[in-house]
Image (cartoon, rainbow over all chains, first blue to last red; front, side, top):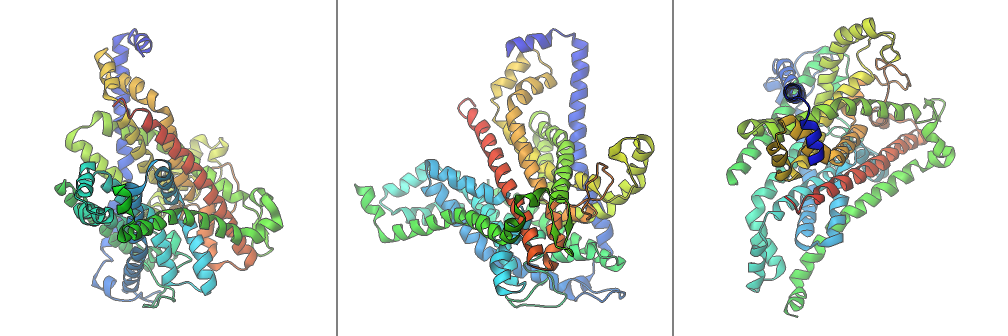
Length: 286
Length: 311
């Protein structure tokens, strides 16, 4: 270390200062380049989506090609149902796994579980769609709300598990010991003491995972598919906001493309509202 | 002894086993992915064999299936993305950890996280209607006019193609690489940085010697994770890559990636072999993502462990 520093410091000072200023500027510039797309996406989505957004967008079904108006009501309801059902799978499974890893896991087995969780998180979402197709859509011979929910649920599991784990890790060890020392059984300590103190944090993780899956498109393309009409049936294809945005975006019709921008605006506002609110609440709790 | 007796408590035991089954269920789920996708792609893998992955033709009508053009599309776009994204992400991570402070640091960190929160389909929409026209009308005519003699800038400026997909992917993997690099930089003990500054190093020299030099392997891990994300990214790529099974050296030419091919054709696949071939490509993606994620996680985990005692 010292040798290296010496050789560097022997260079003349002026050159070093110039290099310093240049490199720091490059760092600042590259950060601006990194952030710029975020602003651009926001500006365009607002600019192009806002004019199409009306009450109609939230309350009516898509209009046929050539007619203006129409909305994405069935997609919004579909997304809500998909997310709701996905949570029924992803939330309990994820929380249970997170609790097990922090409260009961030790050494190699905990490491291995955490590792598997990371691997599941790293599987491309389109592959989750293929997987769900193979054991739900293929045997049931049709796209369905059920299949879409399972695909999203699988994506939720590792996210919820990881965030639960992160929260429970911050609970000090002496709280567990105090509970056990009072003669309370282990599961009571976990349920009544540890979870009671951390449910806010766990809920935060769950809500963020909802924001995350609400924009997932790839796993829904061939599980829940799409539908231009209302549907509430578990075994029927159902529309969702992201799939509808995709369908409209790649269509050749300008009216539909406008609808896609409006849909993107609604989706982005939903995701950002969740992120900002949750972060604000979480920070206040801290 | 006391503890053992308590563990025998019925509620305790039930609770423990329920959690354990669910936690280990994740491993079963991973195995199920592997087994089911392999089974679904068996018709094509047994008939064509592994040469499926380097056969160059894809034609559902004549039932010819080879994955090479899509493997090319995936690797080319991901490498372009990595090439563009790594310097930018490192810059952002350094600004957040080493230069910015207080409120500015928080805002910057928040913006990078928001970059990750934008859904793929929205990036695709933006790419299709903002990036693609910009490339077609401004960037690509300029490049082909001045650097047209290079094979990578050959052909008509279409907008859609490898270049558009690479750029959109670069934006999408930047938060991944930036966030993990930031975590790596934060594990470096403060004394290293203070030592360098105390010896009279400029801020950049401190960054280069104390931070970048000691996090080379961590940065490598972060880049592999970014690459892994780029390989499997579907919607945004499907919308801007041009969807053509073609292998070309030009960045202007349309192509097709593994993930975007599946997105385009799976729902309307025409027969058992077509479905099996698409699944086999998905199986390939699964294997690659498992491999890259495990390598990268192990690297990142080792780096973080290295400094844990010294902080």
